[in-house]
Image (cartoon, rainbow, N blue to C red; front, side, top):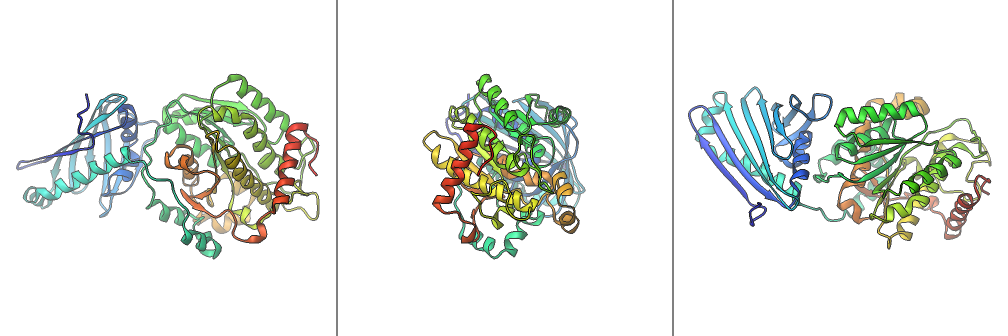
Length: 485
């Protein structure tokens, strides 16, 4: 049973000549399974402990006895945590080592679906002269303990308000250089300092993700699997899909990873995929349209469609339109992965397949992403009453195979500033999982923050152009592979 005074923090201090012991307890209104899963993913400790600057898991594979974590404190001290015992929903036990102290920490859990209690017991053995200080000034240790468990409680119970757009962010984007700086790993590092904790669990939630065998897609798939999601990976290559599923399970311990074969640039394949998903009749909690590539020179698919248009715009359009009933059954979410390149382009409703003038792969790519942003806004408007939220995001400049292959000169110049795939995928995962992200629809995001969808009026389509664009897509959805105007 969970006490009635949920949310309280209890701290007990014990001192002797050799050790200092903290004994702290909290109660939260979350299922014990969710609470255990969040705390057991110990690399997120910086989300809830204000004394921690960063943390990372050192050992591969899912969290298990023997897993090690590196935790860097704000004042520079590095701690190594080794998990020495665990029982799901009951106990985590760590040995901690550092140059200033060693410790043994236990985190005990109990509760049910309605609430959970967490008890934290830590026994510190300090090296001198720090040991004398800790024993003479126990209030300093008590303060550290209270802040940590209070942060844990806030992360588990707090549901942040819906994010709002910032005028300062919009201005920085329009000034170009500050906006471009945000695309780099330095921009991500700066933004991360303001992230709210994300303790959401995706257990029992079904996520369909295209382009999941490398880069941003594979990183997002691992992150979502780590949150407990059941994943359907959409890929065109069976061997790569099977390897992606295997690697995700090996990394996270989540074996609810499946794949569907589909070339998202072929409308026949996309329709066949939709038929299978609809026949399965399994609700889709999150659909992530991520598959992408940049093509040079201009090429056409076997169906006679320009490759960029087919893969980046028409494929996601068909998939999202057709599985909408599966999304609507569970107030689902759609996440469209875009690019900052769209800021440079306007949709050309009379030339969706880049048939006029000289062809540029980067321009075709950016125009297709602009079209997907328009669809993001349209779907958000159309499906508001159905409870489906639709958002778009920009992963920033990330070090992925797609960038290396398609933009080698850009890669050579910017390599030292590129984000990791995990950093690029963070906002995908946040839009898919965070409660507050589900409160906003039809927006464009970078690093969990709203950004304007246009930087200049010259990229804005008129109402008539938008109507022609949507009509062209509707015609292709209804009529198969006949070319758009």
